[in-house]
Image 1 (spheres, rainbow, N blue to C red):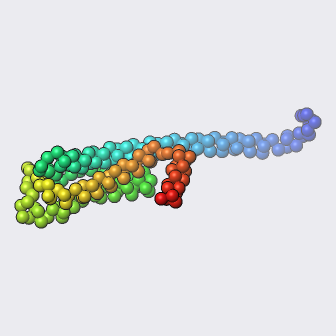
Image 2: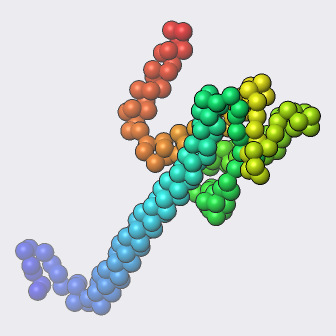
Length: 201
């Protein structure tokens, strides 16, 4: 053992306990680090899955509200008297996940909160916009859930409905960008094209 492949290994006998301890400790430390890294990666995947699930759920709920506003506009185009709901459905998914909205990223969270802020205030905005028409009876009630709005008054409401639609569309677009991010090359090309268009225009 004193000479292996031309190397003097006589010192190993004196230090073998220390060398063995160092090798054993290194093996344990490496095992702990690798298992911790694996756990962190699994946690990231779990968090990403929950985030994507939350974004998809909120997007579906916002899509339902968008359909409500779109159908208001379509009904208005097809009929002489417009029927507008007095109240919107409760945003159940948003309310149930309100504490987790911040996990979806800053841009998406801001867009989502803004869209739901408009949805929450629908009744108030609607009442404020048509308050005078409600007082003097130019707007009737079509049951407990709807207003019967004549075309002249609907002209006042249409910009409000378009505002709501715009905020909801923006939130859905931001969510879709979070769920399906563009490759870096595509984003850079889009920015370059936008700068070029500004310079030309």
